[in-house]
Length: 221
Image (cartoon, rainbow, N blue to C red):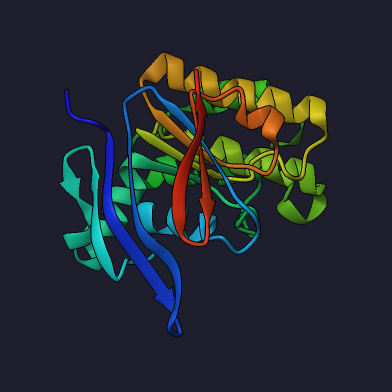
């Protein structure tokens, strides 16, 4: 079976400043990977490139056998919609939609909406009593949990999470990571998570550290 994600020689620069310098990595179905590194090291840039939100200057990204770096904007958007779940630091919830509608949003776009799955995610993430509320009426931690539920609702093959527990207390953060890892185990999805927490990183299968645009492996289980 082919690797779910294969990256080779990825480079990216902004205004002549090299952010990624020939990054290569692979991630198998059902595998979890923690990506650590100091602020400004390129972690979010790498996630955005994998998530088809930006294009690299050079290198290739293969997701489930499809080279997304060679796709046009429409095709890349389809890959993101159907195969990738993104959890942003900024939540990116839609203000005009309530919690239930935000959770269902990407699954509806991907034409795989499952109300029972939405209800289970809401229950697991402590959102069942908040479904009729709008983002402005939620705390930061609640908004983060809605964003996580939305990213999981369409059963993606790859979950990209940028500090998914950064706005949560330690106990809730542990529960969220439990849910992410359970999804990986249950569905064969893969998880790549940016985190500053060495404690949380140690729970994932592999750890990579990004420094000055280059990757080094820091541990594995």
